[in-house]
Image 1 (cartoon, helix red, strand yellow):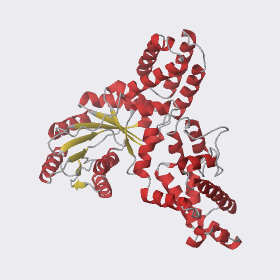
Image 2 (cartoon, rainbow, N blue to C red):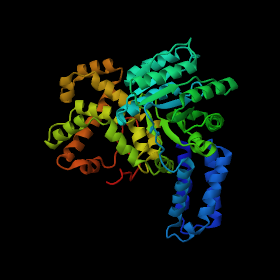
Image 3 (tube, rainbow, N blue to C red):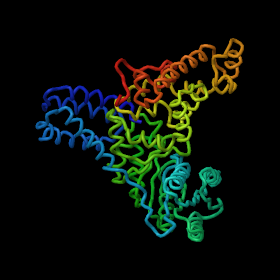
Image 4 (cartoon, one colour):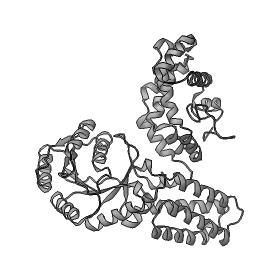
Length: 466
């Protein structure tokens, strides 16, 4: 998300931060570029106007003129206003209620409500140790109830059975009664969507809200609909006392206009964003972190959280002990490192969260870096364990068998073996020296798999801090 906007804003602000003096003329020029970039990102026009006016007032005031580094001061103003536009801080779910805390989900058909219910249930179970029940009041869409039942099974949530022949309000009453009986902490109610806003839909969701009396009423909206997302959220907000918004499919939205418009237009906070189809692809929305990423400053806090949540600590410690003892880094170790990288969202997601690496992340995506990870894993999976531990035994016939089994070419296999040799050298340099030595050993090179499996960063590129 925000790839195009980030690129344009970063270029504009780089030009400005290089100037010794900030004048009204060059600020006006920069603001025109910022305005253009926001409009191209499909941010609503009223939101753009307000944003530009606020930045202009602060930039032409005392904040910039008295600064020793006026260009940097202007950058901080833009960052602060972007953050204010999306909300000053993360707005968590308010579940302070006599159990069950009822959460009502609303939105148009196809926005991803049902999947989001399951993602939220998993998040509350794993992070907050809450007991969760889910119920579907969608009696119109074929297989909607069955879909929720299947997803509930995947995430370990209690499913409250309902039937298409029932009235939605009756389903809600019965679900609340059962949740109380079972002493469930949180009850999610999935509601029916329509292809467009209509009067019947709004009347039904109002009736469900009256019966459920939820502590949270969340509007789920597809980020890829751009300005329409904000306008639809506004219509629902006028019909219901919304408490927050969840943006789905943000990984497929290159512009990001919805994220920048929803808060301003509705006055309601974005609480979560959907970042993929996987059941754990839901993240709390942090305006400050996203503002930094838009401006190319990275998101180190989210990167650290990804490592904490998604890296297998046992495997990581096992490899660390192996390297410390000076044991050989083999292809099985290499495969496990590729799996860890994939669990963290792949090389593109990793680089996108590193300061100054947004453009490199874009290059990684365009050169199919993450697809190469899959290819390399397929090659290693076609090897015997003996071959993984000792790739020196790979002769011509073994290589033919491996490439045929993995659907790859001899060139692909040889590139993998070359990458592995490079990683072996790096791991040797790590012996007793830790991560800093590893990064110096890499010489600023990207992890294997990016750029046609060739690695490499732009000249002078380095990982931060090394």
